[in-house]
Image (spheres, rainbow, N blue to C red):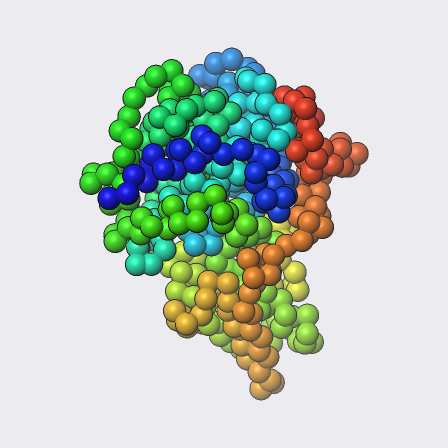
Length: 449
């Protein structure tokens, strides 16, 4: 058995920012900018508000900034809130092999830590890249064939804490043994079930993972102990959460290829497995003239994972609408666009939308990749309109540009900041790698009360 935990810890400890390829460093900036927008955009959601009200009863030192809000919390609770808010609108980034959203817990932990310890912009980007790298590689153990992870387990909850622990451990200067302990302590707190999807409980998963990861690193710094084979051990992480774990992929080309280079940034506020469906339906809507009321049937061909995770014909509210492929197919065809405005409670409950959702049929087949889908719309006048997508917008095969991420982030920042303040935050976020002290940057992130 390979020493997976120690090997990954050794790499994270020894890694130097100046040896990372420029493209990898730039991808770190892209991931960070995307995350800042998501954290701001979700900062006023009801579940975030409820969590803040509860945490205020137990909060410790008021030292850490909440993106887009005036409140301050202790570092652990701020980490939870910032990671939770970044997931609240299903707009966070995705690692397709694991279907995890790796930046949310890592960036949240680093932002809170930056207000406790001196941290430069390059240091933040380095730790961010490492946290994403290690959590995704551990996730590949569970998800890359022949390995299989139970569909009910949230990879965000299983992996996010490990990424946050590695990133925080790098900032704290943990040695190889300390880093292995931090990874182990984070793995020991791994949790999260997809049954909570479309509820507030789903958004709690990345928040809890982020806090657990930061806690793991802080404990390791103080000499708290844990097994140094928590990932690969006979009673450890891999065999407990997956079948036929693929250990080789965790260390293959370590330091030569980088998982952050495969991240997909979402153009739509929905579950990532829905994106190819949205693209196909938007192509039909924008290429043909028809009335949605005259649609007789909508036939979709999709990857089975889309059905397993997002088959909700009659979503009860916006939370369920975010992860209903039937809803997104219907509104994409009706409105010719797919944004926040298409998933309000009012739209989700609209009788016309509800009627159209029920006209959606589907075929699930493994031959259709996770980034792919096809759609066929049958009209009452006998016309048949079709479109197929091999690589959906925002996927690794068709990535969002820097300009796309800028526009997406600008729109989310403007929901909580005045336009001029939003532009300053956006510009400073793109230049985070030049920031001499991240704690100074954090001051610009607080929103109005």
